[in-house]
Amino acid sequence: MSELVTGEAVALELRPAKLPSRALAVLLDLVVAFIVYIGISIGLAAATASLDDAAQVALTIAAFLLVLVGAPIAVETLSHGRSLGKMACGLRVVRDDGGPIRFRHALVRGALGVVEILMTFGVVACIASLVSARGRRLGDVFAGTLVVRERVPVGPARFVPPPPPWLAGRFAGLDLSAVPDALWLAVRQYLTRMQQLDPQVSWAMAVQLTGDLSARTGTPAPVDIPPAAYLAAVVQERQAREARRAFAGQVPPSPGVTDAYASPVPGAPPAAAPVPGSVPAPFPVPAPASTPAPAPSAVPVVPPAAAAERPATGFVPPA
Image (cartoon, rainbow, N blue to C red; front, side, top):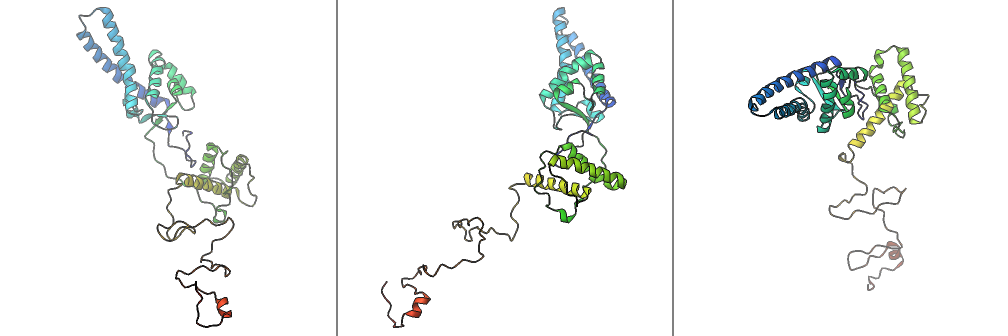
């Protein structure tokens, strides 16, 4: 498998192509290119019979470069890394990050392919592919590309078992920025296959992965949590962070949940923010008795305390 890992610690299904399949694809491409080159050469010889030898040699070299160098570059650029031989063998050229190649990648591969395939009859390309861990020739190394298999048998999907419910949110403050992708992939593969391992082997692997993960996070693992449960809880925390980062600002508010400081009337100005540390009251707080709020009518409202002290004479003082 390739070493490309996503943010969820999932390895991309990119399997590097082996040397036999790559050699067969190159052989098919060369056979097609030579057939086209021979046809073009015959046509040029018939069309340029009246020219001198220098002109015929120049046209022959131009046809050679156009068919055996320019045509493969154009085909790989337009087809995003799939030539005729690669399509027949189920192969494709991709970038190191798994994306489709562009013209600069195809140009570097084609220019170096003239040296390591055509001029040396493929000897340099075979040696470089055998030495490389992912079977890359010199053109792939300098272009930053990789030839992978497109037709891969689909296996059963594997899911990471969830941690116990009592561990939900316990590692929310854990620093996961220093954990490499290779360690995430190892933890995920262990969690998906721990039921198939011997109990002692499974426990030893869990302890080792827990130690590696604790060393990367800088926080020792709790001793009261089994190693496998700790690994599952940390993986779930990382996936939750990736989900919050991916969908930030795109999650609508839950139905029935309102903002405590939102304006109840459409178009009205929002209320002032409360003092930090205070809890907004569910109901409006009445004003103090010493500063009564004026009534909307022209007749002032007498406070209850003043009304009890003043005799009921029926006379209302002027405003």
